[in-house]
Image (cartoon, rainbow, N blue to C red; front, side, top):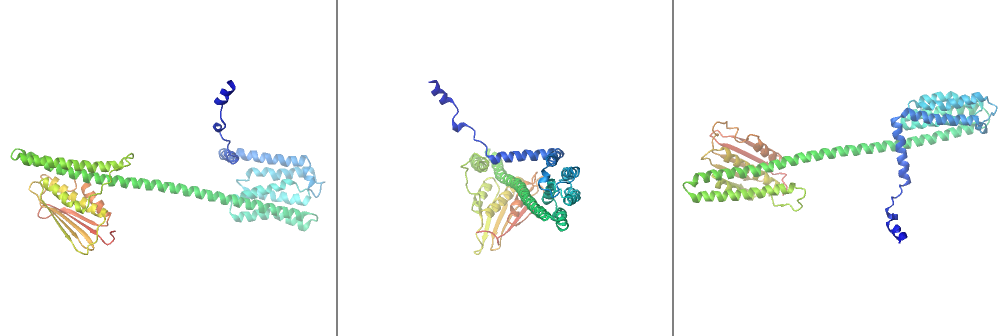
Length: 427
């Protein structure tokens, strides 16, 4: 029982963490080394240079240089000095790689001339790799000349196997040069990809901000048109109902019924707009936006609010069909014009809306006979306190490259003229 329980409660093989891949461990260690190099570059250079000096001194102390030397009787102090001269300048290999090669060049001449051929001479490949990795290619050619020239002179002047040393120098230089160029190309390509990703991310964020600002503007415009117009109609109906309550109760009841109808209509439109904005509303009401066919309903509601309105439509046979967006823009301009007339025209005013559609353009003329509101200039009553009325109409007009003119009439009242081109209007 005990063994069975322990087996059941013990960790299962599927619950154990999977071992990390070998490549991930290698990448983590490389990133740690790079982070240390960025934080402490001098410390890293000292450690690397110290290791190469140690190897050079060990090659001298153990006599390993004699296995490849042409003259095994070369002075040992000179061999030690050359080993240090090849390894110690590596401390500046990243900051001054060309200077390091220039310092090693005369040592390389002495190394070949004496026949010692210390193996530390191969450390010249390290600054050559740094030059291929960081400096322009013209410096790479000079570094190859500095490395191969002493060996070439030795092969021409001195007898023996100096030509083999020249070949080994050339092959070694070609290898580190190609390696440095490959690493440099990959690094530049990676940096270009990172820069491009950052730029695309910045552009994406900027486009998102612009889209959010445009959407806020559109929502504010729709809310203003919906709420402003319906509240103006409700206000007119309420004033008319209060006036008729004492003399004609039947008309007051009709006004109250119209107020209820207009309120429900406004509430329904408001719910549609807010339903689209809710993130959890997956089944938002997607009823069509108002079009030119709804102008009669709009005019009827304004008439019930107490403003006489006459709607006239002229359409030529060659007139094209209008897109839903353009029809919505015309509807909202007429709605805003009549709303402003209800708010500011004064008692006894009347309105005239004329819609003319030809093959080339669509013109809307909305005018009223009302005068200036008491105590205010004529230019105030159409902009409102915040100017959203005219600005909203101009924004809708600019979407279709149209023109909008609004201003007081010489005989009193106010006129709004909208003109929209139809050449590029999609069917």
